[in-house]
Length: 69
Image (cartoon, rainbow, N blue to C red; front, side):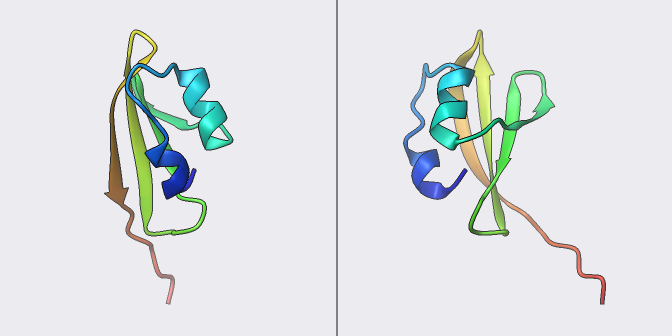
């Protein structure tokens, strides 16, 4: 997912509609909560929350990288 796709997500969309908008499935992180990493920016990810298979909340989170230097 990228920021443009994230902005297209609207409340009451089903998980399948979100997958189509995002161009792929998210990773389940909790019951009814999925995460998509940003395709372009490695410093952010998107959390999308569902209730009864309807989108009820979304947020952008910061992702911290791990340097192996």
